[in-house]
Image 1 (cartoon, helix red, strand yellow):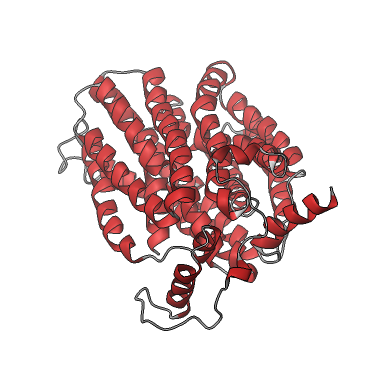
Image 2: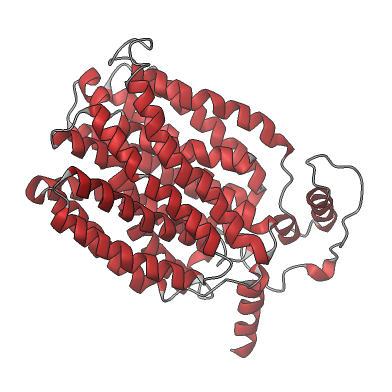
Length: 443
């Protein structure tokens, strides 16, 4: 729950500027390009935050990086609320991006290192059910409430977006306070040779409480359990020979998957308004479409223990591609927009939930946080770049251009995913350290 809370705020923040776009434009007297630039600043900040958090998590620990992320995020959110012009808001969103950038992948890495192999995929999927699935759905409900009944009590259209940033920032400080009780992951401690501390963390995890009771864990680690491969802890090791194929395959897949998701979640409310729907209607319709997100994340969690990562990503990617093509050709009426939009969000979340967990499984412990953050950061770059292309395509081809782009991206995703190793039912050590040691011995 402590990890999920941060992931939840991450999702709300990602959708906030898109949902409040019309109010921000009118209040600061800016256009679509400037609004898209604000989103891009958040995404660029997210890239910086991911890379920094990955390095800090591999060097100082997962718990340290998670707490720092939320502190920076809260500061940026409060500055956003006080922004007096476009430039100040742009800088504040960069800070917000840095804060939330590493939150998603570091949280998933932490879960992957604490949960048994049998339940690992389901546990990671459950995090995304609460964050990406329920978070995407609730976020637009929250913004609909803020821009509807609460708009006047919060000062009207010119100030409601400021209060929204405050509402998203302040609760995160409470999460930071309670996260102090999280134990560090035994795998991280073991990778640093800190066997006794790893046993202490194991004891906490085995006790079903976050308080250390002084008891010994049921199974104790020894120096013999240290990783068999002496691998560099530098983030550049993500591009070394043993793992470069994994980095490339999942990096390309992340560009396509997360680039599509960020682009459509950010642009959808604004595109609907420009198509003639009211702000309230655009938020309501976007919220309805995100029922598909909730169902998709739930489906991914339920099938994680039964279906391989490669199969899940490939099947959802193909169906997402076909749905995007259907939207491009048939997305004219309100009914078609809602149904096809919800279907596309469903397949998007099956893909992204599975891909996020997969990315946290394919790197050795010493570079797991850096590797997962770099791969996820590649998707982050797509989130900064692709909205500009989507806006240009929308100007020329309307929804057909936007979803035609999504279809092409999903086709590339399916191909790229075939080159990453399958991880279902295998321990993290079997997928990584042991496999690398065996390959080195063979050569």
